[in-house]
Structures are given as C-alpha cells and as structure tokens.
Image (cartoon, rainbow, N blue to C red; front, side, top):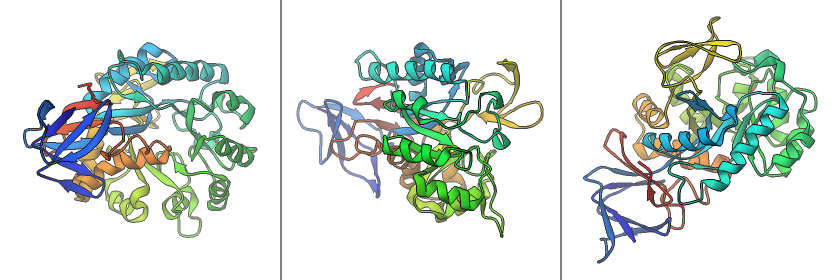
Length: 378
C-alpha cells in the first residue's frame, strides 16, 4: 500500500485535511487516519492532493498530433502531458479524409491497449475524439473543408470501440439518423463546427447529442430572437459544454455565466494542436501556414487555428477569473469530463475503487507529482 500524507485532499464535494490517501494495486483505497506500518509514505509537504485531470479534446503539441496516426507520438504525448497533470485523455483527430482517419483510429486503438501495460509511462488513452468529418463547411474554422463528408454510420461502425466522442453538425443532411445510431452504439456525440439554428440544435439533442465542442467557437451565437447552438448548449441540462479557458478563445467575463448555467456540465479542455509549445513564428502543415504568437495560434487570415493551453493552466485561469473554490474547478477538469464520456466509473475523482490517478500540487495548482493508476508518471 502507498499513502499520501500531509496534504489537503480534494474530493468532489470539498477539501479534506488531516487524513492520508491510501492506494494499492492501481486503485484508490480511500481516506485513512494515518499510514499503516509497512506502507510507502509519500509526503505532500502541505500541498494539494487532487484527482488527475482528464482532457477530452487534445490534438497534440510540440510537433506531435493525433492526426499523424503514429503510436510513438501518442506514447510520447501521453508521457509529456503528465507534467501538466493529465492522467487520461482522448487523442483528438481533425477533419480528414476517411482512409486517413482510419489510420489514426488504428493507432489510437493500439495505444488504448498498450497504455495498460507496465511500460506505458504517462496518461491513459481512453479512446478517440473525432472532431469531424461530419461537420458544416460554413463553420469549419481550422478544419479542412475538402475532407468534410456526409454522415455515414457504416463508416464508423468498425471503430465504435475506439471513437468515444465525435463532433457532428446536427443540421447537415443525414446527421440525425447518424446521431441516433452512433449513440445507440456507445459513441457520445458533440455538436460543433455547426451553423444550426436553435431548433436544429435542439433536434440534435433530442436525437442524442450530449456535448458541445469548444462552446462559443465555430457555432451559431446566442441572439435575442435566435438563440442558436450557444443558446441550446447553455440552457439544456442534457448538454455538457466544453470550454477552452485560455482567456483568448472565450472572454473570461463569460466564465461565471457558464458556471451559473452549466454547473456540473462544464468541461475544461485544451484543444491543443501540434504547433503548441513551440517558438513563435510561422509553421507549415499540409499546405497551410499557422502563426504561433504565444498562446495565440492563427492562420494568416486571422482565423483561430487552435490552442496552446495546458490543463493545469486551464484550472488556474478559470479559478482566477471566477473565484471558485479549487475543488469545484478541478471537478470541471477531472470528474465532469470523465462523466461526459462515460469514464467516471474509473476516472475523475479520488473515490474508493477508482483508478489511482493522483496529483500533488502546490496551493496555486502547479504540478509537483503525477501518478497514473498508482505509478509515478511525473
């Protein structure tokens, strides 16, 4: 048995002091008064003991990307993101031609299997978030318009064990029957890159949509006579709302509004792409130029190309702009994203029986140590 002592332990409903967190065989045992004789003691040195973070929307960083279809890159990204507190993630593909997507899905399927082995040092791969290709060209943003396709569940059927979350525009031809069949086969559907009216978005929710991709970005806005996708996403309790809390994609003035509207349906994500965490300047990829300027990644025409956010920074940003207690913000980066893709039985909190995905941080949520399934990953 291992025990983390001398720390404030973040549970979903609040912090606990004066207890030790026990775990063994990769699972949380629970809170105990003191480490028993023979247990390995890990001193949190007065810091925070937090559940590991779950990123359900991350493409890549440092020149690596899930859309490259390389298991070595998935392995290296998993290893590196542990230093940012991520213990589980969904490698996220872009809108690509279907044969290319199948190559990516194959790599992610292999990573899902390999990450349970002893030699996988880093965040666990829970499956894939396929951001497209069944989206609306009018709201494609950074996606490749030439690769946008009509929804076809028969294409997805062989990959339902891999694709855990899929971004779809609910208004495009064939989307509603696709959504019904995909959700019936265990795939969670997110509405995004969509020009839907509020009525079309609501029809998507009725068909099974339970998620909104990077809320506010690449979707119809909320106005006083046409609430749009944003209005439906914020007002419908069946929908989890992703948020890129980098203070750039969405103005922080809206963070408290999202808390009031969504509560436990608010999900912090990174939407990080392969140009993230690289020196400022232009980068060429697939015939496109992406200009990196700090946290801002844009195409030459000014369109946002993606994010350079990390999950630990998302927690710090959101906390700073809302004043919420740390455990509530951590829920938005751990328990709620896990729940949004059906992984909360094993991930997202430090409750007995769940995977021992644990962080030790300082009071400002800077990561000191990361454990994935009970093993130190950072």
